[in-house]
Image (cartoon, rainbow over all chains, first blue to last red):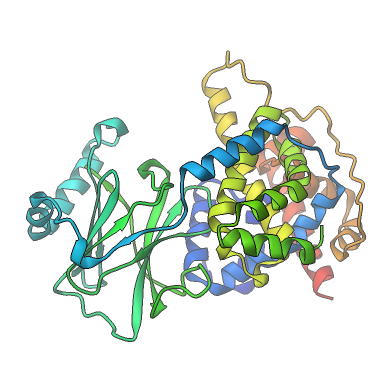
Length: 233
Length: 179
């Protein structure tokens, strides 16, 4: 499909907003929104237009319990990400370092497991990792996820730009807005506090964007440069 | 609900001000709940979708920007997408368990839809210019979250025709809106 075609983008955006774009096509479009300003802008335009249809719907208050639950949920899940200073980083488990040195092999094994055991129940998958590679398959960042933190190691192969920062994002299934997980290290190891919404079964994709120093100025990825999927072991 | 009123509340919400968030909720939840309820036809599911949407609004308030449209449109989108997910989740669940005691999430007994717009936006003018079938198909998709294949069942029209109505209706809308 030619995603450079503005008319096609407009129609896909319209059907995305309307809700008639569904299944894999809807997921593809959500991924496209991550990487294309034109796609995002077309979607926002249709949202603004079509949501005028809601004016015909007569307001109806929800029960009082709804606010109580929302209030409890936001109190229980603070939204502020906490970046642990590098000097205070708890050293990751030895297995991370071993895995890093053997990551290419590990990734192959993981892929093999996914192919050979597609029906493996999720509850048996206890370890979550992600590996970002460049176009020539060189590893750039290795991420190990535990219950509380994302431990991220920058590869020696990474030639990071000094005038930019690299930001990690997750895209949840069925949602269009990427969620920032924090800035990535340009060298060494960094630990990010895991976002309360980080749930392996909900994540469609992980992405890295190139950002001005300090991170995204508007809460959205400026230029997505790498994407990968979460690997469950 | 004008942006003038909602934008300061959303901005304060983005700073973690829960009082502003409560005001934002009070100002918008009746409309947003009604949108979800119309789509899901089930109060419990609609309230659940509303909860999820407001939790997302709390977390993502700082990601709003004026280029995304008005505050209320941005919030409607969050509620609609969450409601669409809920609608499809419960439909699949219902298909998998026929004895499911959930109230019907795809209750479309109120079809065809009677639509009475409160405001005179350009979209309303443009949509009134569509053929009746195009308008009905777009209404059913927007308000009830019906997919192409569900529209086929309910309008009793072949899939290709339904897709064509929607596509041509949207194209005509776009031409009208950009004039």
